[in-house]
Length: 291
Image (tube, rainbow, N blue to C red; front, side, top):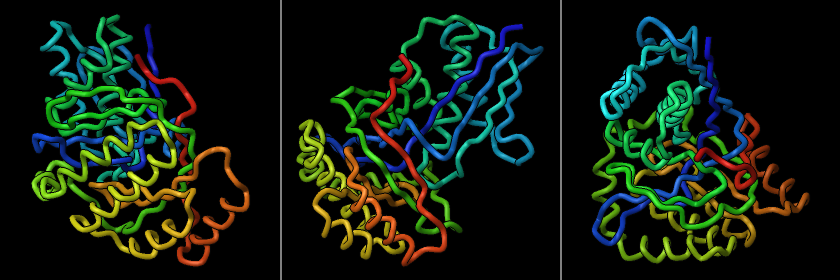
């Protein structure tokens, strides 16, 4: 019996989340190719469609089912299968959990049914179900509209180490109820367009400055605990960027490769002095993605 497995490593916040020249949302997800959250999705033929997310834990699977039904309707196929998703990240944190679940399920079903669909087509389908992140090509910088599903690759992601932490473990952000944030971001539209040009420059130092500024703007719209101290720390280190989950609770320091061991230790000491838990480690720009 055919049995397909799919891995999506997800993201940790965004390089930039703002609006374009027409006021539409635009997101440069900080997609990663190494994450402490290893999501594995398996799909196998079954009598009907069933979806299980993080077996043993009560997790809503309605969006994944809706996306699979949308796939079946759009491409005239029958998606009778059992989908099991393990290791999905916590919800409402800015780690792309819902997008990971849907994207990995659709990719696995694409292989199971031998469907000829590009990842751009899959992303459009995802956005018809919910506001989604483009996570298929972690080696690339992708500008995406999370509402209408338009997207374009604008360059390669720099090789980086991200040391991230949850600023409010008890909180979660409902990404389907944050349209007011898009409206608030329109007043920064001109600056967001400038930051987008910086991100697309191909220069890592310029990218990190843009990401830090996007995080600063976002903290005026959706404040995070401890942001001021993190911003001050990052600003004092020219080779370190600060990234935020613009609709979540995570912050992170970005260290471009080659990593200076003394700099990494200095950044880790920031956590040791302030938080009981060690930072989570993510890596960017190393592996190829789905096609």
